[in-house]
Length: 180
Image (tube, rainbow, N blue to C red; front, side, top):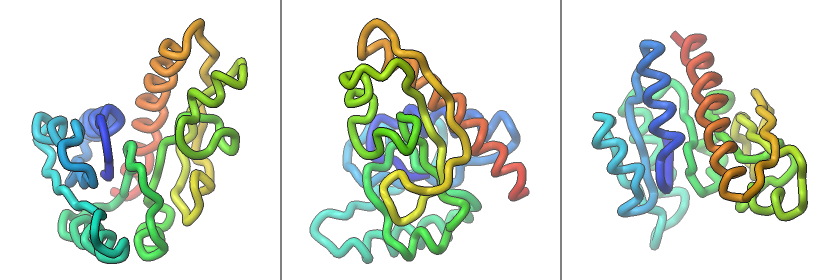
């Protein structure tokens, strides 16, 4: 799994995979001090910090691919990884690299999706799990869950994160079951 921040989706995926008899083999994080690294330690998942800063993107992504290969990854799940991945990574795991996005794609692709949809007055928001391709939130959709607008932005964000954890975990486990 690849993450850049808090790691709540990472933790939900690890627990769901374990409950289904699968194993998270590695967390890769690109941000020093990100909370997902602490979560990985508490969950007993090996973690690697691979930073992009100050070096070519291709070099960082070659290190990511090598780490995933060494760990024996069958599937790559982005869990709050806030970078677009280059063609070599996408090609290596095409069809087996997934992302969860907090909107009903194609609406509100990119960052700050929940806030933008909420401020626009959307009555129904949601989450999308999709395969990753070279674009930003443009890969084939595997599933979506609708979430009604709550009274506040904070309540709406909480509902969306709960939906992310449910939908993403279910779809990742289904794909892992197919790989086995």
